[in-house]
Image 1 (cartoon, rainbow, N blue to C red):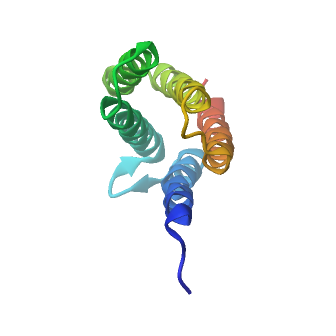
Image 2 (image 1 turned 60 degrees about the vertical axis):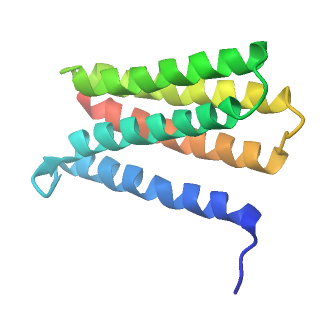
Image 3 (image 1 turned 90 degrees about the vertical axis):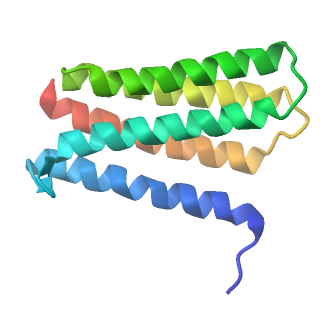
Amino acid sequence: MRTSASTHPIVLASFGVIPFVFATYLSWANGTFFGVSGLELFITYSAIILSFMAGTLWSQRIQKDMNPLSKYVLISSNTISLGAWLSLLIDVPVLSIALLFLGFISLFWVEARSLKQSESSDARYLNMRFFLTIIVCVLHLLVLYPHQ
């Protein structure tokens, strides 16, 4: 079976949720993976994915003509990446998870606003991003709940 190029982002993004689910399970079960707690796995994976996604948004905008929207997206994506990095430095897991949670919401908002104002608006992609953002945010709340 061959998949079209337009389904690859959806498949890859869906697979990207699996480590979130695994780390959430470990966090609730007080388990470890290679000696690392589920909570630490969750925070570090979340920060990496948030930074990666912000970076892809940044790279999409850097290739376009600089306009006020492009400047806004560049500043926002860099701010979100720095927030993800800061979440790794905070020694209070609840604050780290809350910062990452807000980062995912902010990133979706910036990306949706950017896509709706550009000529390349892709409703299918935006719907997928919304659905996956909801899943990731719910998982953040599930990890946050027992550690509050």
